[in-house]
Image (cartoon, rainbow, N blue to C red; front, side):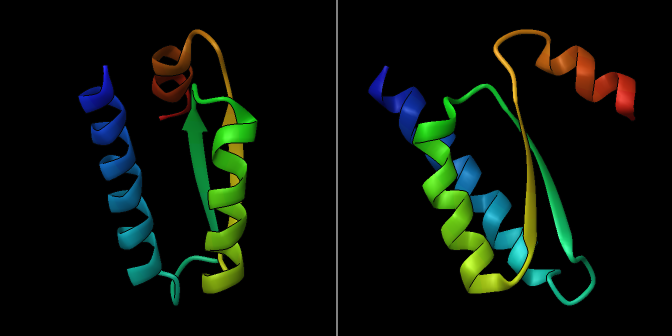
Length: 72
């Protein structure tokens, strides 16, 4: 279970690294997550503060893949 959390954290870090590389082109970043808001929001706020990129976050319990697929 710990390795799954580590993998998720590494993937999230990769998303932030990629997003910071294109911050000159994008003023906003949309993130869909099943994580609890209290766990991830401080990280998202720190990213916005350091990069200037606004993060729009959709927190969901179920149906994440279906929502992302429906929005293209």
